[in-house]
Image: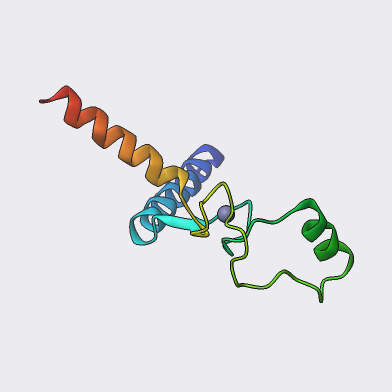
Length: 93
Ligand SMILES: [Zn+2]
């Protein structure tokens, strides 16, 4: 087995695993609020970095603007899948 084949097999295994993940769980945690749904201000971020015990609470005070307070985001793989499916549906109508 050459190195190229090994790399190709690793990439294929990763792609298969990621597409399986996107099929099982299309939503991942929001990167902005870490899935809490809370709007995290620069002060909260600073406090979390300097004093880890003072983490912001789970209760939503002000919803995260990126995920609108849901704490979820569509995975990139799922977004690509949705785009391709929509493109195919529009093209074969
Ligand atoms: Zn968010």
